[in-house]
Length: 197
Image 1 (cartoon, rainbow, N blue to C red):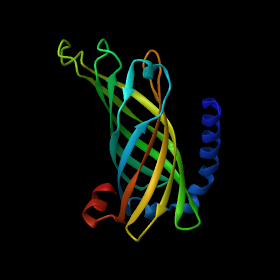
Image 2 (spheres, one colour):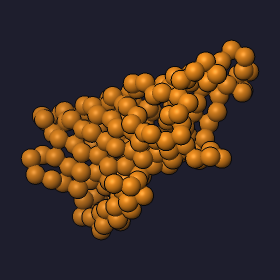
Image 3 (cartoon, one colour):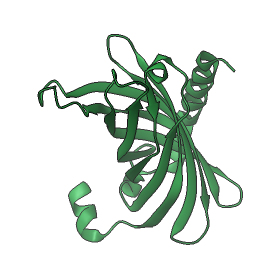
């Protein structure tokens, strides 16, 4: 399926879930639950970036909580790239992001999440000939996303997520990342709830 069709479908699903916000979250429910995710991350993109660099395995840590409408999360994802030839230096990428998403509850203690992610996509190049300023680049990145979560106990769940990231450089960098991992779920501690509210 062409990527633009995938994006259109995601936008349509995202718009359809907006009507569920008032029913799924109330003002008093905001920040009352805490979810911490740890994930494995890989890139399956075949855009021009992959002609010059090859993505390795990555990882991420995400904090998520209900918001006044939907849910929000703050995350850091690390994904290294190696140059396909010596001319292109290896680099480490960090995507520091804020996400808004809506959960659609499904049978068997599972849910589907649809939302948008935005943040800073940092590239740190492993090239000693570059100055510290030249060797680090940070750009705004945006991504629609879809994830699936399956509860396996009172406190733990498994999840998988697909991201369609656009890094807003002069020539767009497009990344299709898949991740999966485990999350820990609990009530937000009272001291943290006071800070968040």
